[in-house]
Structures are given as structure tokens and as C-alpha cells.
Amino acid sequence: MRSKEDLFRLIQAMSKSEKRYFTLDAQKTGKKGSKYLDLFKAINAMEEYDEAKLKKKFPKNLSTDKAYLYESIMKSLRDFNGAKSISVRVKELITDARFLRERGLYIQSEGRLKEAKDLAKSIDDQIALLEINREAREIAWITKRDYEKRIKELMEEKEISLQAVLDFFEYSDISSKLGIALKKNFFTSKPELVKELSERVSTNLATESPRAKRKHLVTQAISHRIIGNADEYVEHFSKIVDLWDSHPSFKNEEYFKYVNDVSNLLASQGEVLNFDSFPELINRMEQTNTSNLHLQAFIFQKVYLYRLLYLINTGQKHDFEKLEEGIKSGLDIYRINIASRIALMFNTAILLFMNERYQECSRWCKDIIKQSKNISRKDAQDAAYLLNLVATFEFMEIEDFEKEFRNTDRYFNTKDKVVDYELIKTTLELFKKIVNAPLLEVKQRYSNLKVFINSHHENNTNFIPMGIDELILRWVESKLTNKTVIQLCSEFKDEKLSSIK
Image (cartoon, rainbow, N blue to C red):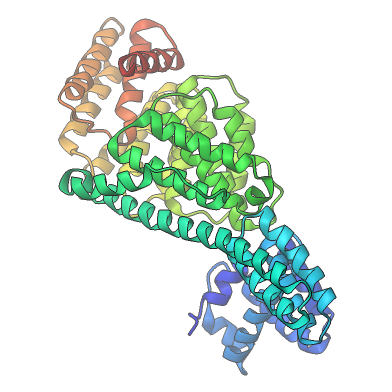
């Protein structure tokens, strides 16, 4: 039984091209199609689903009409995307072959199966190959043409496909168990289980199936992640991305997984502070013209998140106006969950602050504060208030800044904060002393704030969330050394990298 909102969610998930295709298709069916098109347009116009509003406009048979419209949209999506999807085409060809066989058109049926087989091999769809094998056996039995030779070939092909499927699911099971072990920290509580699973993935894979090979490599990567072998983790995801690139049809058919694997490679490289290949890998993720709105949104998130992380960690020069415009445009176009939106917005604010573009930084911080009010995690809101305060200090008149300070102080006096308010309160007091200090004492006040933040770092107390204490520290040091914030961030990263090596 479907939820009342399923149809609404389906329509919201459609791209403009898919909606246009459905509209044109519905218009061809005359009066009946017009009725359902009106319902489609009414739901499409809704920001939030309102069943009562629909019932007023469509008082008769709404549930039945919604069910019919749902199925009509699904058929339209299959038709629209079928020409672009190899796996959909394979299924169509297998169905065609079956219809032709049932009508005694065996040569035509075999022609369809051959085309389906070639396409299925190009995307490594072993389950489809087994279905094709089954259909080919039916024709071989009926026609008896070179029966013994043909059956022997089909048996050999079946063994190859079965082994590939078994390998895929075996390593899929192991990777799932390792994922659970990682999440539940079984590395310390159940080391024997992790050891057993890791030993099972250390063996070589016999099959040549790219799908099974990928799952094997993913499983090995997770195993190295649990053990803490960062270099091997990076190396295995590099091999996974190379595997995708050597099988372009497979990659295009499973582009969502490809982007996810490139994202994992970028994340693993970022953990060891290796950002050299970020630009090239980010460009790889963008190389698609998909009409799938969900995939477009996913690519947008990953591309801009890692582009921001690259610029934050390398200090490279960039066209900030173009970057901001791209992020704003994507956030307007795509339905992205609030956590992902905040991550993009916050990293944008950090990058702008590092490059001393304080007014732009403040605007993003205020947007974060507005959008994060209704989420359970308040760390982004806490950090945005503090970063905004420092940013506004750089460009506001003193009277306007005093208002910002009072707003921030009032915010941290409320209850249920993620962070320790006493430490924040001390930070705000030290910051206020900088604002009110006589010119000759300003430098000393900056030094006092630096000492305070550093003292808590030594005690491993990151009392300001989302790494903002580090950024504020670099800002304070810029006031003491006459270096830019971006210079000091780069020097800090180099020191960190040296300590790792």
C-alpha cells in the first residue's frame, strides 16, 4: 500500500526533461489524458503535499486517479530513460526474444538474444546473461540445430556467469559485515571476527567480472580502513576508479556508484593530506550529461564539496564569484537534505573567511543560522555565530558590530548548546577586550586570546565546533604577524603534513 505522498515525491524527483516528456505524452491521449495531466500539474505546483487541497479540486475518485497517474508516470519514465539505459534495453530485448520464440520466430528471437548478450557483457550484467542463457537453451531445444555443441557452449557460459554472481554476492556479504564492524567498533571489541573477515578478502579473485572485481576491491579497502592502513585504503580506491575507467559502458550505466567511489578516493586522499589529484578527479565526476535529477544533485554535492575542500586545504587562487554562484544555483535547483546543504554552505563560509572576504563570509554564516534552526545538530549554528562575529568585526561600524556581539552573546546564553558555554563565554570576553582595547594594548589582547585557545588545544579540548577554533587561531595570528590568514593556514597544513610523514 502506497503512502499518500508517494506520488508527490515521485513528481518532485522528476527532471524538467522527464516532466516535459510526460506532459507531451499525456496530451496525445486526448480527454482522458487531459484529466490526469491536470492532476499532475496540480501536484507538481505544490511546495508541500496537501491532500485536502487536492480533494477540493478533484472531489471524485482521487485515490484511483492518483494510482493511475503514478503508473502512467512510471511507464513514461521507462520510455524516456529506456533509450539511454543499456540495462533497460537488455530487458526489452529479452522480452522481445521471448515473444518471438513463442510465435515460432526462432531466428529473429536469436537475433534479439545476441544483441542483448553483447549489451549485457558491456555492462557486466551477469544476471541478465544467465536469463539470456536460459532463453537460448529453450530455442536450442526446440530447433535442435547443432544442439550438442550449442548446449556445451551454454553450459560453459553459465558456469562463468554463476561464478561471477557468487563472487559478487560473497564479497558483498563480507563488505556489509565489515561495514557493520567499522560502525560498531568491532575492531576492538571483536577482533577475531574482523581478522577472519579480513583474511577472507585477502585472497585473489578468479573471475574477470568488473562488477565482482569492484566489490572485491571495495571489501579490501574497508578491511584496510578498519586496520588503520591509510595508504592501502587510498591505493585500493585508486584501483577501483581505474577499473571503472577501463570499462566505460559499465561506468556510464552505474554512474552513481562511480561518483561515490571517486568521492571515497578523494576522502581517503584528504585524510592523508594529499590534494594533488583533487582537480583531475573532480573533473572526472563532472563528465556526464545525465537527465537523472537525483544523480545531478549527487554530483553537484560531491563536486562542490571536494572543490571547496581542495581550495581550503591548498590555498589555491580561484574565481570566488563564479564558485559562489555555482553553489547558490545548485542549492536552489536541487532538493538536498539539510545536513548536506549546511556542509556546503559552511565550507563556503570558511573558504571566504580564509581569503579575508569577510562580508561574503558573513552572508553565508547568516544563511546557515537561518537554515539550521530546525535541525537537531546545533554545532553548525554555534560555529556560524562565532565565525560571523569575527567576520563582522572586520567590516562593520562599531555600533553595528555591538549589535552582532549582543546577538551572539544572547544566543550562547540560551540552553541546550552542544558546546561548553563557559569556554565560549571566556572566548567572547577576550574578544570583547580586543574590541574595546586602547591601540597600544590591542596586540597583547590578541596574544591573550591566542594563549587561551592554545591552552585548550593542549588539553585536547576543541570547545568550538567544526574546527572553527583553528580558523580563529589563524586569524588571531594574522593580527600578530602581519601575515594573511591563508598564508598561516597553508603553513599550519605543511606542519601537519610533516608531522604525519
